[in-house]
Amino acid sequence: MSVFDPHQVLVSSAHFIGGTYRYGPAELDVRRPSDGERYAGLPIANTGLVDEAVENAWQAFKHSDWTSRPPRERARTLRRWADLIEADGKRLGPLEAVGSTRPINDVIAWDIPYVAEGIRFFAEFADKLGGEVAATRTDHLGMQIAEAYGVIGAIAPWNFPLSMAGWKVAPALAAGNAVVLKPSELTPFSVLRLAELAITAGIPAGIFNVVQGDGATTGDALCRHPKVAKITFTGSTQTGSTIMAACALTGPKPVTLELGGKSPQIVFADAPDLARTASTIASAITGNAGQVCVSGARLIVHRAVLEPLLTDIIASFKAHIPGCTWVADTTLPPIISERQAQRIEGIVAQGRALGAEVLCGGQRYEGMGGGAYYQPTVLAGVDGQNPAVQKEIFGPVLTVQVFDEEDEALTLADHAIYGLAAGVHTADLGRALRAVRRLEAGTVWINRYGRSHDWILPTGGYKRSGIGKDLGRAAFEANLRFKSVLIDIGQ
Ligand code: NAD
Image (cartoon, rainbow, N blue to C red):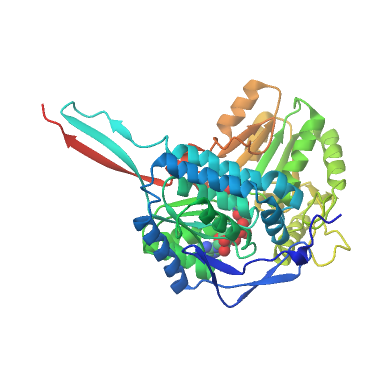
């Protein structure tokens, strides 16, 4: 049953600058992942328009009262914004679901409340974290004053358009900055509604702007702009490197980079509840059809529990219902684009050519119309050199490696490039903590997988999975710079 009619969802094909929509000629086709149909065109902000957006943000930062607004009042405004977003499910829900891979029921139950709660979380820091008094000599008073950067450039990926924008924009605004956000050109529209609601909530025009376009044009111009004080980016490792280079050449300016991953899920023979563990592992690689940075893509399992665990995982994979994002009973959404689906197929083919055995899936579902729907897939018989184990696939593909000894498991878990997250399933506390110490990952989950909704634990990568943190107090502080002040107060 369809929850909404995709043809009835009207999008504003525009930028949002200085508090108003700015329209331009449609230069890029935007397609619905669910059926592959073009549903809108997208204007591209060139260097001139990016400059205009940044200038608007700069003027708003300097001349509106946003950064000087009493912190409690700024926090109140942000909470108002969060309330408006949470109450906007009827409009915002279809806007998010129609053009992304997020099923409408998940958007309503999860994504929208998650964004709203994130804004509330960061709003609370606005009036609670300032600077600090330093331990100087008694004839001096030394302080560190926390100040906003000015204009923050935020660049977001397509996999959770609203939530990823929220990760970037909420702490930046709470800290008193102005923001220019570039969403992914694949999922550009839903964040415009956030910007519109920000104005209704009382955030001054120009404090939150959206520029549309591709990475090479619009994203690059944002990174190189001299008045952008900092870039916060979530996306692939390759793009992260390109962005860092652009920021170094034209700044330098600080960057926060949340990048790719290829996270392991390690199951020891004493995993507490094997059926529950199987369910956790299956959902960690099929959620959003595997299009999640922290997808648990590599199962590393003790030989003694391999068979029962795989039986349960495969049963869970086969029970999925692929479908459009507007259909109520969809459990497995589409792959974002035909190009991305072909990339998944390519890596699976490379893996098979080097000996990977397909235990289930390994191909698209048939008869699904114009969307690309990839079957949850298990690839066994792979070693660490197999491309399916090495590369971030960003699809519902789980590789399986078997071990006998604890040390072997932890060696297998260590990825040459990525270190975003890891899961460990064991009833032995000592073993769990040994794994925590040994694993090179920004986050380790024990007997669970996935972030909690507390917002307080920062997220970020080790190795080439990133620099800096989103979420938590660390993300708020990353949007501030600190000024040292020393006062001679005499004897
Ligand atoms: P991507 O790197 O292709 O694009 C991300 C954004 O960067 C888009 O808005 C794109 O237009 C822009 N961009 C591309 N080239 C640019 C350039 N030269 N200069 C400036 N901007 C540029 O990533 P994607 O395909 O949209 O997203 C998937 C990737 O994101 C995966 O690798 C995934 O692991 C990662 N991701 C990481 C996290 C995390 O928290 N670590 C969260 C979500 C997604």
